[in-house]
Length: 147
Ligand SMILES: Nc1ncnc2c1ncn2[C@@H]1O[C@H](COP(=O)(O)OP(=O)(O)OP(=O)(O)O)[C@@H](O)[C@H]1O
Image 1 (tube, rainbow, N blue to C red):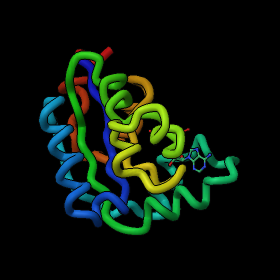
Image 2 (cartoon, rainbow, N blue to C red; image 1 turned 90 degrees about the vertical axis):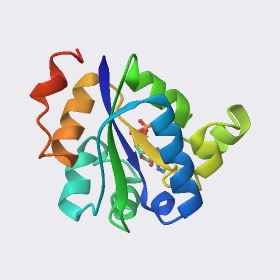
Image 3 (cartoon, rainbow, N blue to C red; image 1 turned 45 degrees about the vertical axis):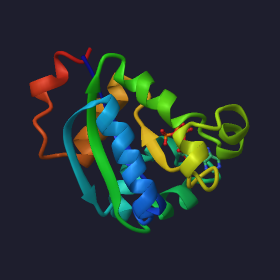
Image 4 (cartoon, rainbow, N blue to C red; image 1 turned 135 degrees about the vertical axis):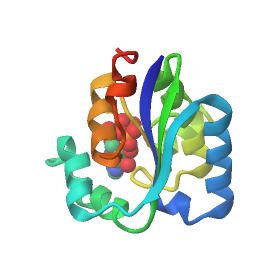
């Protein structure tokens, strides 16, 4: 069974209806190993999105992540990474709206940056991101099964 990190971004967490809809989708589709709301600091957001350091949207993205509470999940299922990314839909919301109108980013995203949610893109990323967001989680419990 694979694991992944899902993050709901602050504009979703502020919207009670959107938050409930996303939580329901997650609870329906995945085994949840851990979940919590958290305030992402400047340091945490810069560490989390280090790969985008040189992108034009880096400041916008890290600022968004610091702008309120996020909600984080460690998900587990068969093909968990791709399954969550399929539910989220395309990164760019305008594309999501045209190509996958029922996906989560189409329904709850507001812009390319405020695209509702995040999902790990590989097992290596999932393990790195879980260690950042859930330092208290004992990853060795599940890591060997998630290769
Ligand atoms: N062109 C862009 N303009 C503004 N923000 C962007 C743009 N591309 C990506 N982002 C923001 O950066 C985040 C990370 O981008 P990345 O290319 O890794 O997309 P992703 O893998 O689909 O998304 P995520 O990593 O959040 O699941 C996106 O979720 C989005 O918030």
